[in-house]
Image 1 (spheres, one colour):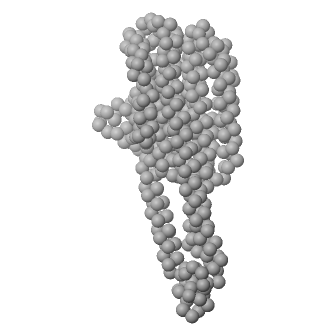
Image 2: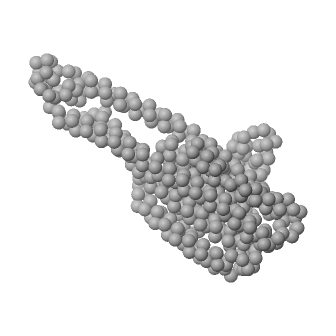
Length: 432
C-alpha cells in the first residue's frame, strides 16, 4: 500500500510538470511580444506609405519587413515546440485553437505586403488587416494567462497581457495619426477613433499597474519622458482638436511617427523586462519544487531501506524487546508515530499552500473573466445593433457612467438579455 509521502511526491511532480509547461508557455509569450512589436511598426510604416501614395517610408518598410520575417520564424518554432507537448497543457484545446486561428493570418502576410507595396489598399484597410492578426496573437497571450495555475505567474501574465494590449492601442494610434498627417487632413470619424485609442491605452495600463509589482510600475513611469509626452500631446491636439477637414502639415507625419515610436520602443523595454521576470519566477518556483521533491524522495528511499521495520508505514511502535524496536536496531532511525506526525504536517502544509494559491488565483482570474464578459457583450451589441467594436464599447462605457455602475456589471446585464434578442439573419450579419 502506498504511503501518504508517496502521494505528496506525486503531487510535487505534477506541480513541477505544470511549472515547466508554464515556463515554455511564458517563453512563447515573450517571443510573440517581439513579433507584435515588429508588426506594429510595419503597420505604422505601411500607413504612412499608403497615405502619402508611396512618397514616404518606402526604404524603412523593406527593412521592417525583413525584421518581421526573422521574428516570425522564431514564433513558428515556438508554436512547434509547444505542439510537441500538447498532451501536457492544461488548457491546450483553447490555446491551440487560438494558434490555429493565427497561422492563416501569418500565411496571408506576403499577399498583404504585396498589396501595400502596390498601393492597392487604403490605410484603413491595411490597418484592419494588421489589427486582426495582432489581435489573434494577443489572444494566444490571453489564453496563456488564463491557463496559468500559479497565482504569482498568473499575476505576471495578466500584467503582461494588459501591457501588451495597451501597447497595441498605442501602435494603432501611431498608425492612425501617421495616416492623418501623411494624407494632409483628418475627419470626425478618425478623430473619434483616435480618442477611443487614447482612452483604451489608459484603461489597459491601469490594469497593468494593478497586477505588476512596484518595480515594474516605477519602470513604466520612468520610461515615459515628460518632453516626449508633451510633444505627443501637442501633435494630438493639432490633429484631434482641429475642425474636421482642416488641412494638416504633411511634414508632421515623420515627427508624429518618430515621437510615437520612441514611446512604443520604451514600452517594448518594459515588456522585455516583464518577460524576463516571468522566466525568472518560473525558474525559481521550479527550482524550489525540485528541491522539495529531492528531500521527499530521500525520505521515501530511507523508508524503503527500513522496510523490514514493522513501524515503517505508520504502524504502532513495536514492543521494546521486538527485533524491530529502535533500541534493538543500533543506528536505525525511530520512525513510527513521529514520522506519521511529520508526514501529516507536510500534508497539511501542502493543503494550506494549495488552498492559498487557489484563493489568490481566483482573485487574479477575476480580471481575465471581466475582460471575457466585456468582449462577449461587445460582440452581442455588434451583432444585434450592427455597431463597430468602437461603437459597442462606447455604448457600454456610457451606460456604465450614466448608471454609476462598473463596466463589467453592464456587460453582464447585456449578456443576460441575449436570449430575448432577435437572431440576426445570416445574410445581414455584420463582419467582425
